[in-house]
Amino acid sequence: MQLTNLALTLAAAASTVAAYPITGDNVNCRTGPSTDYKSVRTYVKGTDVKLSCQTYGETIFGNSIWDKTTDGCYVADYYVKTGTNNMVVKECKPVQAPGGGSTYQGKINRTEIIQRAKFWTDKNVPYSMYANAPDPQGRNYRTDCSGLVSMALHAKAPGYSTVSLPEIAKAISYSEIKAGDFVGTLGAGTGGSGGHVVIFQQWIDSAHTQYWALECANKAKGCLRQKRNVGWKSGTKTAKPYRYIRTLD
Image 1 (cartoon, rainbow, N blue to C red):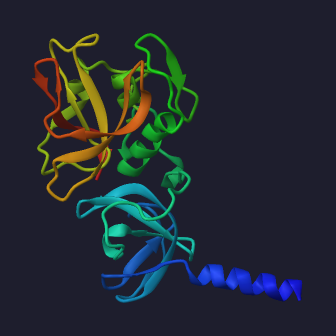
Image 2: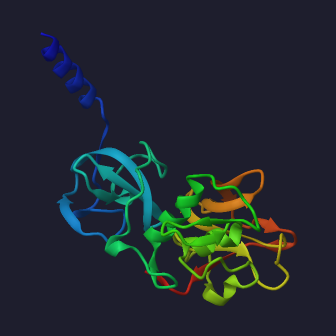
Image 3: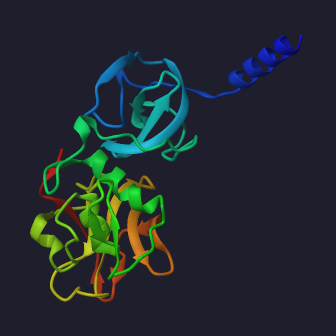
């Protein structure tokens, strides 16, 4: 009797999990949150899927959220009708980048850039322009804003500065920006506390006026994920978007 009641309770709980329809034709469900990962099944349009968690990965038509279904694979949230551009369930644990990850100062995909940035922001690593902290492979990077960006890009340690980051980047427009690009007040005159830089993660609004940033902000906040408005300033300089020259698209 007790086992029967337990089974009924579990079945009732399972039935309350929301299901969301697939909006695209033959949508791939992959082993990780980007098209770099292997497709393991396909959903036809109208299929209802239940979500176990969500995470950030490759941007698909302006949306970098990926949904892990109860089938154990990831589908781009763009193709799932959840009714919002924000997460509706808990965030997934980080997924290892396909192919074992990038090499030091080598090419890197956008999913791994975000994962590496979150390696510090999820831990709220303390901010310092003089201290170091390890990346996922144990290599030490400086724990300030440009140090986090350098670490996320798997670029030269202990990290480029806001003055020197343009040496490994190209300027882009906000209409081109994708998860894993970065935004900052960079170049001459931004040394020390004169400049700032963040990793771009995800647009918050459909008008593209606000986004989620992964950054080492300051001593009070440490390294974290927080909202940023387009056009924020550091001193008299207005932040602009950039793309790492070794980012894989």
